[in-house]
Image (tube, rainbow over all chains, first blue to last red; front, side, top):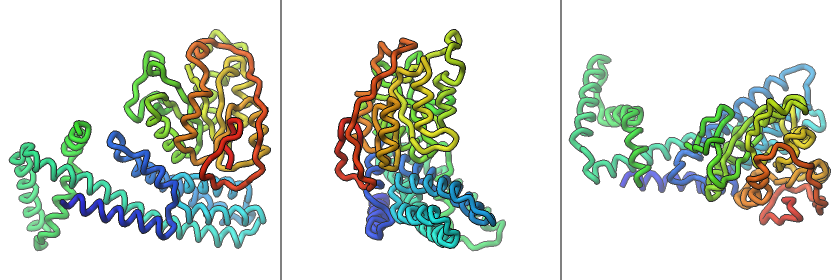
Length: 211
Length: 195
């Protein structure tokens, strides 16, 4: 089953992140908080973390661009970032923030700028992996649903009709754009269409609540 | 879980006063959206014991509690039925200690137990909060064991209905000198989570 293979890949990704020291035990604690009633919990926390981290990094960049740096303010933002990264188990960012705060204490602008770049680098690295992880989880969730949808014979004819009309639309679109139709392109486009169908999303939620 | 506008994020619906039967209503105060969400989730999965309301700062907490007006303004006071306040220490504008002080000094709020969360194990900070009437001082990030303790601190339902109460006497505690925040396992010394 495709979903099982995808889950294995995702587990491999998470394991490698632990292996590299990108994540620590706190992330395992978060995984334990996710259950069938709240399948999107980690994705939600990751999204909140990324939004918060980007806001804080922007503020820090602005503050360190000033000729007279307000180290007290810088330290307050770094403290916030350290707290958030610690809560999601982002150990590299947390460690870099500890170093950053030391430079703040010493009023060392050069050290602060160097560590800010280090934090940004670590954040970008982590965000890329987090994005892959979240997309993978969503993909596995949909794949699981589709597999069971057909396996249980839940109106496959109606579903096939949706896919057929989508394929027709794709053909028209490709002719219109003068592009050749590839199977991979078709599959990708269909997947996008399926994932963005709110009706399907509602059915998935209804299906998951019955399980 | 309710946000400040009262809508439940986890589809939680309380009674007429926003509380489920026999449940403890917790007000979570934290400026970090990540920590707020994690604490909410920890509370939600703890055996259906808690109803959660969360705000992102001390001033909003006082507003929600109805403690931002003058002390003698009791005819306008609407008891929000909060059984316990769980607040972060380090927040902009009003920190956890200032919120604790404001709650304990107000004659309508002095009976509400307050638990402080912090990412730093600072003995001075701990003793200052305990002296002001904090029930406990928990290290972040919070874990399931920390949440299990909260029910013991929450004021009993009959107290929730009363508008005033005498101040609690803070108990004296042993405070650790360690500043290291690695905490596996987490021993507790007289209600204080230590590293």
